[in-house]
Amino acid sequence: MASNNFIDYVKINCRSGRGGAGSHHFFRAKGLPNGGPDGGDGGRGGHIILEGSSQLWTLLHLQFRKHLIAEAGEGGGENLRSGKQGQDIIIQVPLGTVARDAETGEKKLEITEAGQRLILTPGGRGGLGNDHFKSATNQAPSYAQPGEEGIDEWVILELKLLADVGLVGFPNAGKSTLLSVVSAATPKIADYAFTTLTPNLGVVAYRDYKSFVMADIPGIIEGAAEGKGLGHRFLRHVERNSILLFMISCDSPDINAEYQVLLSELEQFNPELLDKKRLLAITKSDMLDEELEEEIRATLPTELPTVFISSLTNKNIQPLKDMIWTALHAE
Image (tube, rainbow, N blue to C red; front, side, top):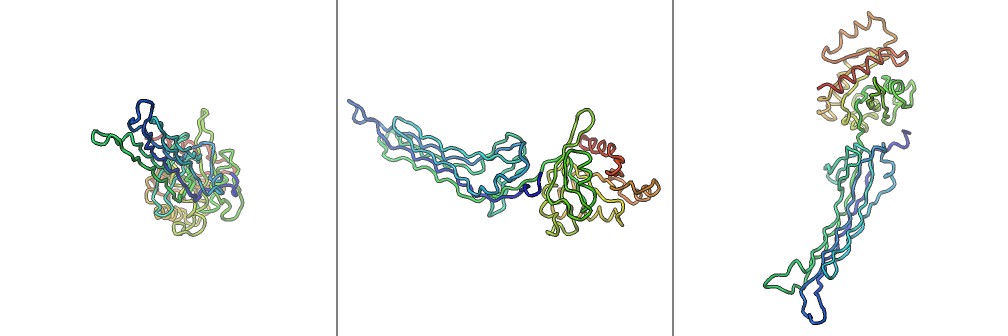
């Protein structure tokens, strides 16, 4: 997933089709000059529909497609013929896409499954023909309904990555290195902060041909929930992860304090994130001996499953996978 191709936020203008007008036609035939009303209904205007696709990972294809205009419905005809419905516009989006009203911020819908189709902007209803308005006291209604107007609105689409495990940590905690070791993903890795500028996904192979999806989220810094650093833009991707794997380097001056800062940033962004299962990986632990490991472990929360790993030497990588798999499938 190239960094310049990862687009997780677009604003688009959606215009659904206007409904066709109902017909106010009267039946006429030889020997029957005063036939009754036979006007048909107008066709519905075209919807704008979102469809989930498991083959898409970004909203890049919508970045420069700012206006979506659906077709109007056709008017009704004689002999109770209904007008043709306007053609719908179907837009494929990645799983995890959320649509919001651009003015109010209100959530309209979200796409979470492949093949799922939801109407984003409904087309206008077609008008009823005059046949609907006949009665014992009004046997020749000369009016029919006009079609309803379509909707013209601006919509924000934002992507929240769907993954089983989300990697959470400060810059240079070793998140990208771990992802590159346990999956085929090739995130950018370097020894400076903010190497990862966009989220990366990788499929992690497990025992007996099983697998799970891991997401490397750009590093969080203190104050990210207020918009500092890069974390604020990408914190929303953490919301869709089943498990949060906190990653802290063993050379941190206070591992427990770093963990509490990360928790605080997540809580400020969305308190519900604290309800997710949490695991802790102490990275770069090839620099530690057993005695130092035990000293560090004694300072950590006892209820938090913890493993000391090294992506460089593959230390405890399999036990980490086992811990993740157990957490994913625990009741």
